[in-house]
Length: 540
Image 1 (spheres, rainbow, N blue to C red):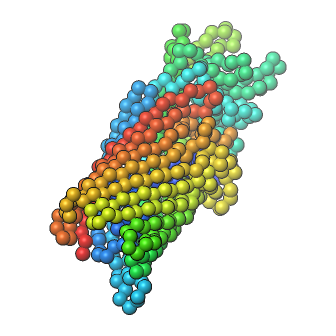
Image 2: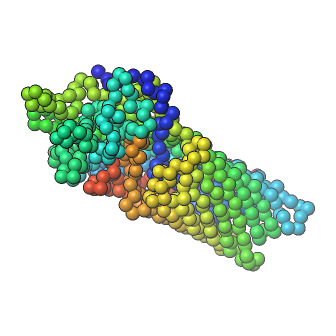
Image 3: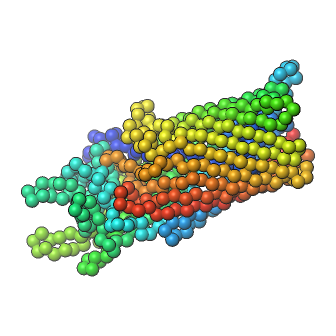
């Protein structure tokens, strides 16, 4: 039967429990994808100084000041995400509404300097988190996830982690849920010395090396899978000003809505010649949801009156998020035990006996933890140049220091552990965007673009769980530099109606780890995304 503890102790200390966001959560929520109109994407987003596209509202808001006519548009498309890891290929396709925008210019005839004041509105999908990963045989060198569980339980007595009808360890804010799952499913217990005194935790049915680290039999197997869904929706409101067609100024207020879920499965097992298959499974659920705001200020200067050359500058404040992390887990196991009188070995846990669920032990609910996240400042410099009416060229450089992300509690208290992890694991990210457009005839334009973003992770980064963390998802990926190639075509259907099409190819590699252990070798992960977008617009 299921192992369900009394809830008597919950009311005493459940308030101290905390799901703990990590540096990897901070990076994911701070990341900016190349999204927007099909023209914007087709030119690699390098329109910060060129302007004239609604999507510049989220990079350099001064870009909307170059509009002379009102423009309303809608963009839709689909993404196909592919992941290759450890011999497994996963593919996931999703259709989505990418962008809705409106720009309305208001000419100013009473001023010799101010030419127009423009209002802009845009909704877009800022980030798309949909992806699936599958992997078998993630273990090397005999290491086990139980080694991380044992490290989290270092210094604790088994009585603190083991539950009974009088004590529910789920309500103890000092106990991490990964060792709690291991102990209460029976795959981890306490070592004792010759005097019967506890000396630390180890995995039942597993081995210990000469340093008392948990190791696995050479024939051990393992498996991992995850499903990620959701994204970040962005809504922008902008005002921009055109001064004599030489200087453009814009400001944007952005609102962000986060809805991200991740469900992971991890298994370790091996076949004992006498007892059969032994091991455990753990299922982890995580959901991050909430809202944030930021402010962007941008300018474009045409320094030479006789030239079309333009320089753009923009600065984005951090996004100030108020978020909730919701987490829970289910675990089950079959492990080896020994009859102390006869010395016979036997398996424990068949027929679902050793099952532990956080939901059962928290009155049927997952745990919610409110927190605040401040993303990095962003600085943008861009160049734009047009040749006649047929060619437009753009280039941009952006910088964000991901190590400056900051986590706080709902009351503003500092998350010292999480912020120390961010400072040591994350670093500055450099992004380069290049793009061009060529009109082969007045009604048809061809576009190309390229993006490069350096990795946000420092060398040797790893996902840290505090000793009392209630998160049980231990996997992480240190992703390398991101490359994106784009292409597009624009067609003017009538004097007012236009259509743009774009294709985006994203590729990125990384090192995947199922858990944190110095002897665990990474598994190479290769990800690609193919995106197709179509924009239909009306100018009036």
